[in-house]
Image 1 (spheres, one colour):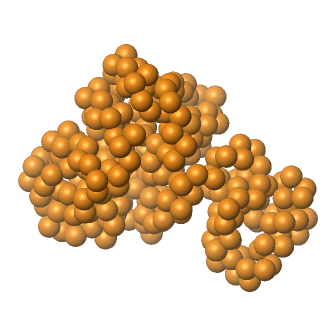
Image 2 (spheres, rainbow, N blue to C red; image 1 turned 120 degrees about the vertical axis):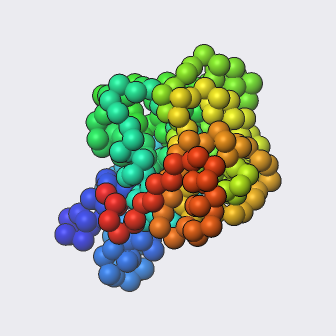
Length: 261
């Protein structure tokens, strides 16, 4: 195995999955070189090829072959910074809820890496797998109908299960966010779970990068008053941040260049 191929495996072990474009930039080589290395490693069962990239071999093949693939790699630096700050608010022995967003998948990886003793409730198959990598955390998955687009469990059974739990903290992201109004989603299937768990938590943390501010999507989900802490990046416009502070929300700014793990 060449040093370059080993570096590919090291990156995948740390991040879970990468696009070919990411690997080209990290290795400073051509697309053809990356694809040849990935092909060699795939033949050795050292990694799994996916649509547009590769993922580590110790994860199920379906893991990143959903519509989540493109979202996982969007604004990655901001997401890593935001989730690094979010981890600072988590204490051992807490019970948490994590939604199935790409941002919370990143948070789940950090939780597993930190080996925190936690109870994590989720309706996301991907979150359950990521947190389940550490033996220190107990994962409770809300059952129901599987939605392949979000890789989450939804529907009546999942919604009924929400009523059985109360969590110390809920961590959620969103498709769009208006500071004066609240969160918006395009996926009707998952929004009801978010609404129910927002009412079953002591504190709700919204993890939202600056690209989603002052935008609306198909459905209004959470009122801004349901949110206690907003964690965003330094590119967020000052106006909405001041609105949030005026309404009593705690605002935490994550700097991608300093807070990134």
